[in-house]
Amino acid sequence: MTGFGRSKKSTASFSVSVEVKTVNHRFSEFYIRMPRQFNKIEDKIKKKLSSFIHRGRIEVYVTVEGEGIVNRKVMVDWNLLDHYVQTIADIKQKYVLEHGLSLQDLLSREDIIHIEEEESGDEELERVVLQAVEEAAASVIQMRTAEGSALEKDISSHLHIFESLVKEVIELAPSVVQMYRDKLTKRIYEFIGGQVDEARILTEVAIFADKADINEELTRLKSHIKQFGKILTLHEPIGRKLDFLLQEMNREVNTIGSKANDSEIAKEVVEMKSILEKMKEQVQNIE
Image (tube, rainbow, N blue to C red; front, side, top):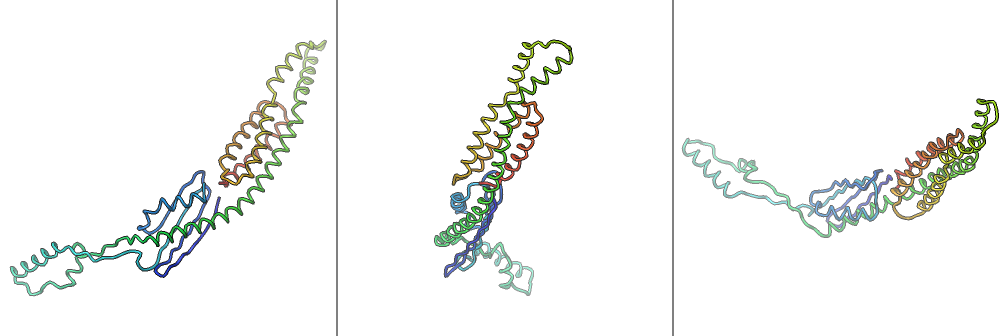
């Protein structure tokens, strides 16, 4: 489910800005970009976000500005510097050179003099970052909740249509066997042109009725529909549960299509599969 949230927190020394974006994903996947000194609290950030968001690709961008974020020190390799200066002096004396060693020459040597950055380790800064992450995540949830409400209405509408199609199949199912018996009797009569063996017809019809029986599939579909509706009302991550139920419903519909051997039921099966496909697309957006 998509969502976006932003939070900015400031103190006398620094300001923290956090943006959180979420997009659809089958699992929970984090992508965090932030200053290097906060790598040690990455697990804390993930844990805090996980308490709000349970499914999707979560992108987090942390920006920090201000003083005291990074401590910088000038580092001098004194042993190397002593050796360098002494070597220059020896070269100058040996070859009678006029130009001496300048300070600029020394400052340009990064292997001798360089600046190191050190993490400040400010606990207050870390606390503010986590607080900003929490506020941004809360904003994401508000957006995702609004989207979820619209999705629930759309999926409930499709579920209602699917349920009506199942009821139509239930009404059609009893006539399938009778229609087969009538067709079989007519064909036998036309073929032999005489008395029809009723016992033989009853045997064939019984075999057909057993193969074409879809009552179990219809019963399971009614149960799945009822369970699907209940899950939609839960206030917890339900995406995977609904996805599983849709797979089971699709399996039952396929079985009905292969067993029923009736053109009218076949039309209903096509409609049911179309509705399930629409529901599946929407369920992928649910946490």
